[in-house]
Amino acid sequence: MKWFLVALVGVVGLLVGCQARPMVPERPSRIAFMTDRDGNFAIYIMERDGSNPTSLTTADEMNSGLPNWSSQARAFAFLNDQGIATLAISRMDETGNNMALMTADPPPNSGPPVWSPAGDWIAFGSGQNAGNTEIYLVDSSGEEVINLTDHPSQDSFETWAPDGQQLLFTSDRDGTLAIYGIDVDGGESTRLTELESANAQSNWSPDGAKIAFISNRDGSTEIYVMDADGSNPTRLTNVEGFDGYPRWSPDGAKIAFLSSRDGDAEIYVMNADGSDQTNLTNSPDSQESLQGDFSWSPDGQQILFHSDRDGNVEVYVMNADGSNVTNLTNDPANDFGSIWVQ
Image 1 (cartoon, rainbow, N blue to C red):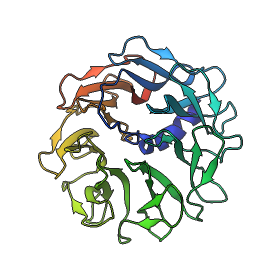
Image 2 (image 1 turned 30 degrees about the horizontal axis):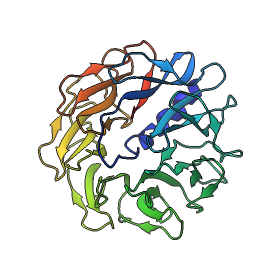
Image 3 (image 1 turned 90 degrees about the vertical axis):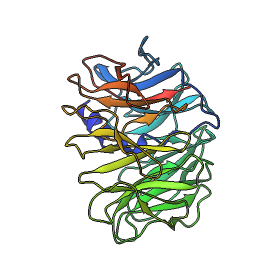
């Protein structure tokens, strides 16, 4: 069980913030999360107020976690170890039924799955395969698996474009970690960031016009924004300490992010131009969403996050202004990897 936790902590930051955004924001009805309260890791679902937590996957024979929800496909994609310590992609409906392995012969040690905005494809990274990592697509039926990058380098999936026609990934193929774009139909990728520094954690604005990302080009790890074609990079944060995991609000007006500027991991929010940077969590004796696992609700009114402020990692929710912080899980187990379900 513990190896599974280590594997998931290493990739949870890649997953969060990549769920498809609805065309019209709606208030989500429930929240899914992963927990080891039954022994192994399993996926649970609960009401948005934390009531009625219900297991969707059994914890008896395999570990399951990092669910990703598609409102279009009405299905979860998630990781499981198949009971044999090899991470693979599965899917199930919102009741936990109709569970199916998405690939009969999956690439080794698959990374977290992310549905396309239309719910017709799932993107995921492979583990070590002949010494390199690749980005794969699998169709919603699990019948077609495509190696999208197919390059002898370390390629890591980042996010789908809002229209589902492109995706962003990071790669060291040109010698330095950089952000690239590629069409879902394949073809040549396009490098969007410079090679003089490391760049990662890209996140598309809801209208597809801008990309927020992190870079150490000015000596410290800060948040930047650039046009979708990579032009006009602009620095948004400029303080001592780590700033990262930028997450656009559904209306594109604000960006939530993680910062260590106050000595621990806190969730901040700022306007899209970098102004009015505000600490939302203000919990100096704890760590908030250390792996960047926090997300805006589709209606933009709340932020889902994780904290150890009560002694162990729990799922919390707060209003978008940081008020009304609520512990939703309140269980001695590890509860994290939560997502909005609507």
